[in-house]
Length: 111
Image 1 (cartoon, rainbow, N blue to C red):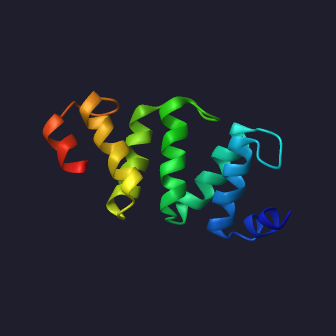
Image 2 (image 1 turned 90 degrees about the vertical axis):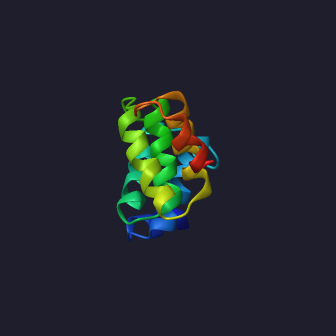
Image 3 (image 1 turned 45 degrees about the horizontal axis):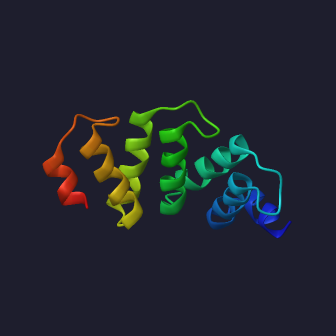
């Protein structure tokens, strides 16, 4: 309940945390659409973990229409702010050619 109140007031950390609760069904009903909406709100505020989480949603089609190019965009935002999981995910995209032109050299640099 506190996460919900804080998320409604625009606190990015709470939006991310509540999104994770919806994504995993921890303490609430599992709802990928609500999770993705909350991640989007926090990501727009520059919250790196939410950028990564929303990127993952787009990569696998969880709560949103699958879109590998959008996933890359979000992974890149998180990676550019220094989030290691964002760098790794972006590297994987380059290694596999998922949402970008395959570039194994660039992938290695991101790992």
